[in-house]
Length: 112
Length: 113
Image (cartoon, rainbow over all chains, first blue to last red; front, side):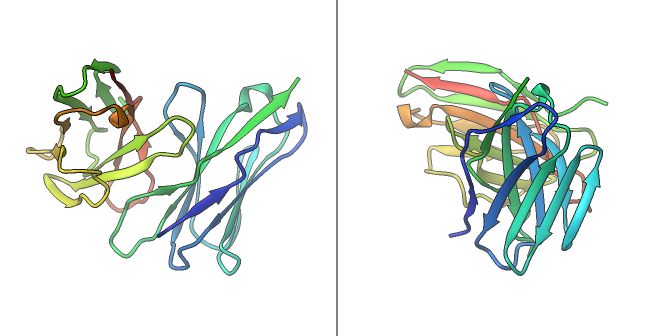
């Protein structure tokens, strides 16, 4: 059973702080990793993808991947109230299967 | 360009009724996925199409669930004899060939009463 684990939160951070969201996965052969943002009542929106070990930065977002530890994280710098949402970690194991396995999501609240 | 579209956005069905949910993927996206999202949970995979071929249906929860994509574009997810446990948001996602990113539609919220 492929599993993706996230702390459900809620995670509360003050406006302007760094929010750190974490995710672990069980399938060692997983090859691609994604972070989706989901506002209440809306569908998931892709914000970051990462495929190799290390950091990937896009604006205020940084994704970090450590395949040896089976760990992927998302940092949000200068957090804004508009970042308040549920963040879903998703993993694809490759090997011809393109389905995504999602965690339950971490709810982030950015306090003005 | 237009994103993934789904219809209807909301559907209320009485227990035992059949429902059909439609997905129109991003133009040119060869892969199409259906996911089910229960309240407070992450999406769970149901089935996957590459063009018109259904390559993976391992996530369909029962033989009451059926999906098709006959011309390799629009897809329909059909649920027969709906049960209360089928109440969820049904999400469709599409993917361009050669990349891994999937883009989701707005979803259909199904409520079975």
